[in-house]
Image (cartoon, rainbow, N blue to C red):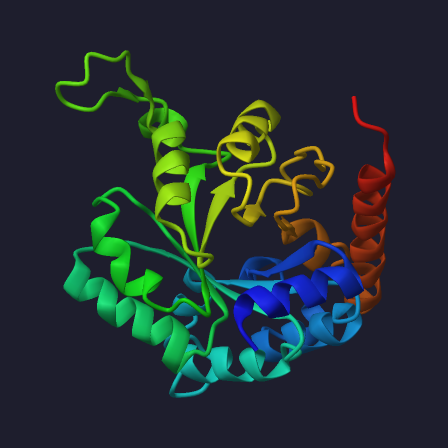
Length: 274
């Protein structure tokens, strides 16, 4: 099954909630004694019927390498244990925000899609869009390109114009949205911060066919947008679910937080258009 088919099926069954699996060792409940796989496996067991996708942020796993209690293999062992616990029916998003020259991206893409078995990956476009082709060659997977993120907008707001066009410049994030939409053959998506609803509305008009990954809901306080236009949206939350409780009831609290957010997504979908 392609990533596109899996996403459509998962959203139809469980709604648009995407849970970020970002294990911050400083915030783990004392009862798990620093055991990241145990913590995340319990989170997954408690929420797997509520989310269409689970997003792994690579930084939180890379930082486990060599830490006490994680075994000699560190990152690989932890990641393997967590990856095995993600349901096959849910989209697995590898959030590495990769982006380099094409030869390097070829290895990033191979690692994400073939070694890790990810359904989707996040990339940045700031070495240009052509170097991203190694990711886009995987047409049965999804590549989410950073577009208008909740933080770090200084570069994204810079106005650019095509050389010799004589046209006024436009913000870089708008150019990215348009260019990715033009290049996509079904394998591209965009990352847009939910904390910026005006930009999200613009992107949805400019790239109506592209699936969107929307961080910023939950701990960052972004509003939940209503679905529309046919393209799927992944409503991502991590900290507000993972760390809903610091006690032994952490998994039950995570489930309650996920249920609450999923209910809010349902309400947003049912609300009349403004």
